[in-house]
Amino acid sequence: MAWIVKNSATMKIDRREQPWLDDALKAELEANVLPSYPTKQAATLPVLHAVQHKHNWIPLQAIEEVADFLGLSHAQVMDTATFYEDFWLKPKGKYLIMVCQSITCELMGQVGLLERIKAKLGIDVGQTTQDGRFTLMAAECLGSCDTAPVALVNEKLYESITATNFERILDDLE
Image (cartoon, rainbow, N blue to C red; front, side):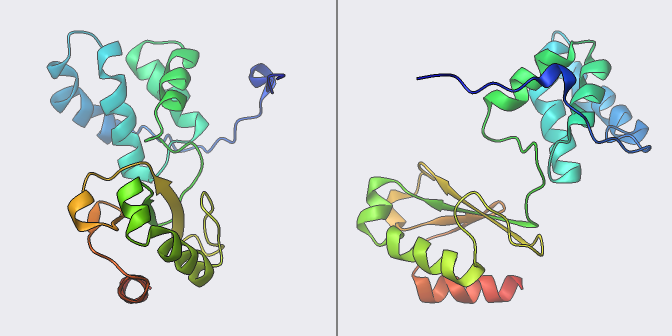
């Protein structure tokens, strides 16, 4: 199997004048995050989480700004951000829907539920609606097998869901 490679050294990075890692966020990180770690490099994950929490994703310009803030190479921060599935390097919807696809959820109707959600939103797993409101993802396990099937909408867990009651949840969000 051949590897698919991108020439990231010449990749164009969309830039905006205003920094993603602004002075207020830097001050907050310096006061509340950096003191908890022995080195700035050790704080890479919480700093990336802070940027993502503020902007709902991490643009490539922000990767560079985080690297400069922490005194790391851009490649080191990019390696970290791309290693963890928790980080978004492209915009995601206002509502991130993660449907558990563990064997327990599958046995309890996850497949039909996911198909109904895809049909209602008009997107597939890994896609975002055109209006930018919803992004649909599948998760390996959300750790609530006793209440399967389950889904996470942003940071709220919905348990024992059916296609019908989950459609009501989506309607309430809209």
